[in-house]
Length: 237
Image (cartoon, rainbow, N blue to C red):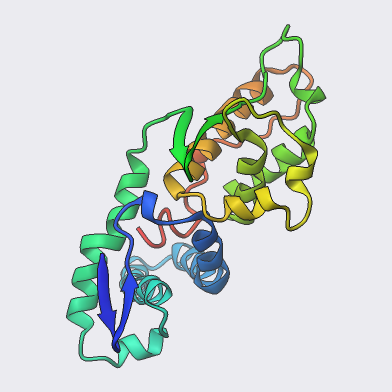
């Protein structure tokens, strides 16, 4: 959706395919962390009436924050504008729809993006495979990254996609993860529908491995049980 604010045209995404991983990371830094912390405080309020009132105020704040991020303006300027009803209508029609779409995502292991065919290369997690999970390059870091992502660290998803999303016929290269590498930077432009598919599938795969291994710690990484903290899932939903 294209709208004009103060004679400047801005794009308001209406689907995950129009919303990049780089934007998601930037949103978390600018607004998401504080919104997450506030939502956690609200859920700890014992008085039901007060909690509901705080949630109403929070929902308004997340709406202004989300709209301000994409519109390139401040939250205060939106609150003081004469177009609050229009902001609410656009939020409900476009931005809020992002999170309903996220809830109904379907799994795919191949994607067409940036002029190329990309494929998801999950690790071999089952016992008896020639290449075990513990032998994979960067495997320990991947587990840590997925745990961090489940806790709301969206920068970790950039590294996850860098390792497991590759072009047709492409092998993994450790240089992909070098600081400021072309591949890391490319992942910032990755649409969120692809990024979330990679993350959720790998989280589920690693859960199966960790929970079935007699020697592994019982580390729970189920993405469906860790959706409260990433603010785009519930806080901005």
